[in-house]
Image: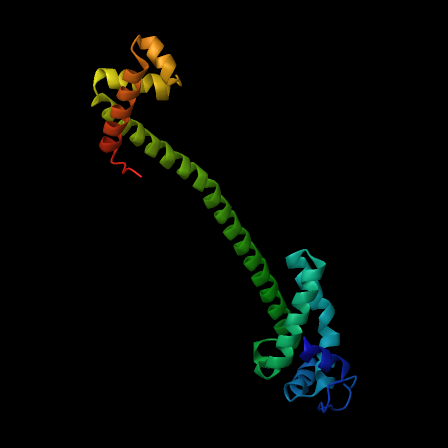
Length: 206
């Protein structure tokens, strides 16, 4: 924006300045002077076309602040590329307004692309918990299957004691009373059953 500010105000240190635009000077002539570094020529183009550029940007963007930003960007480009203008391809006004329309549309597309990326990211993020839940359920099912298979490998008495103690929440004394066996016997069955279960599941002892 510094290029435009300096050119617009004519306050740039050591800036090249020419004669002020004459009443009969065409925009092509003024732009030609701007291409040579003459700020007065640029100012003439700016003052003649800036309102229309702002109008085009507002019509495309529907946002005043963004339209002003685009207008500034357009005139920075005009200042830097004035020498590329070709009169046989259209008027200066058409050249600048085409530039403004292109920049405004690019900004809309860029904003839409950013919105699309955010939506895709949100969809992916929302899908992750579902995937995790499915994976977790599958792992839990696999683990339950392994445990069930290992329980079936125990003796009936060991399996019965373990189920009462660890799956139904009975204390060792309650298991003893429910099975009508000595407490010491229950402790032995639980210890031996847990050891066999641990080995079957591949769990290493601490």
